[in-house]
Image (cartoon, rainbow, N blue to C red; front, side, top):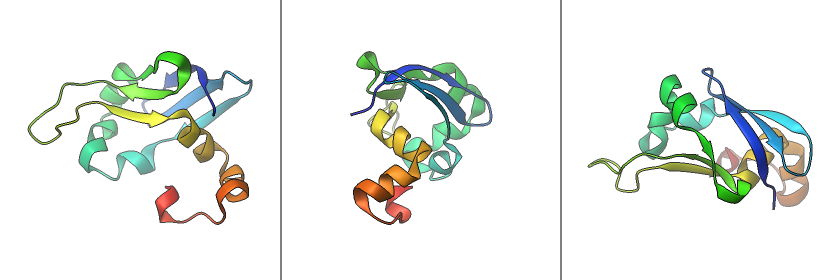
Length: 104
């Protein structure tokens, strides 16, 4: 299981991640934001940058917000492992096989 030591969000919907295990990656979250629905708020660059935080323990990134009528859950979170695989698709292929739309 991966963990995040530090992360910095950018207005182009990318996140620079420093991993607890060492190394850095830039992860493009535009494809995630483009899905709409419960993650639609990520498409707002100001929200993306200002609201992002590293989850306690470095287990992922979170964008806290209160639930709304359209979104009963409220906040958005993306696990560190998911972010790692986005930055290292070759690792996904090694661990799980060919990439498909479900991996996006």
